[in-house]
Length: 337
Image (cartoon, rainbow, N blue to C red; front, side, top):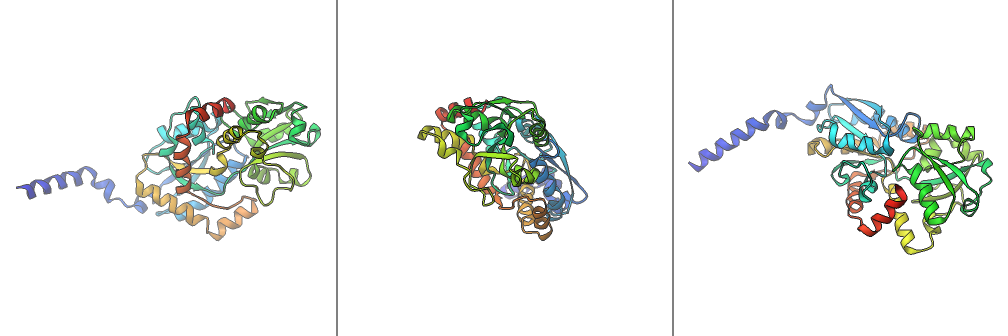
């Protein structure tokens, strides 16, 4: 009798989940369009990375789906993270290139957060990110010390974006005098503001400078005041670490939280409800793409650094950040918001 009951239960379970369980990962993706949502507007560093991945990852996913890149800017990256977590289908048909501050923003209790960064299915990142602060060459500012004496307008997108919190952290912890003007759509628009003279400074990643304005570095049109994260091999000598410039250990700890996006680089993820087999297939496809000769050739042509960060590592960092002690989170929040 118990055997019959057990068999009956097994049959009912199979009927309830049979079609989904029977469909292989390759069957699901064959002929499917996968949408790769990119934080930020067209033309910026995130856009370059996202579209590069969209052109190559599809052939590494079982079933070889068509991957289409779509920009979804707004709210310093929070809009996209909320969309991927709550609105996008949780079936593996949507991948998000998230702002690297997504976990940090949740950790400090930023407004508008409707996701749990520890529950995203992190796929990986092309490389770590290094945050930088730079001023236009005509500003007459050559160092952080100069920036403590002379004000400069810093172009920014919105609350939570590195273009906003880099100068904000420097103002609070290092004494600089940046006037932060938000409302720019993305990197391309902020760069144009520098060229036009409507802004004199911009905080962004090192890879954003090297991919969107390498001639500015070569021709010294921007002056790098400092960086946070692992110093890139191609960064000019003499640029100081912003964390090292902080005066107290507490200030250094706050800076490490604020600049934790360096660990994430430009991270790719899927929503929390994606079936584990599909999430794992996407993660494996991301890893395989990093070794693909055609991908590496185009990355080199675009001057996109490839120094892979694993999805497992991003998952670990997200979990730790979400568990940030309240007293540190409060101080970091004051800088970010």
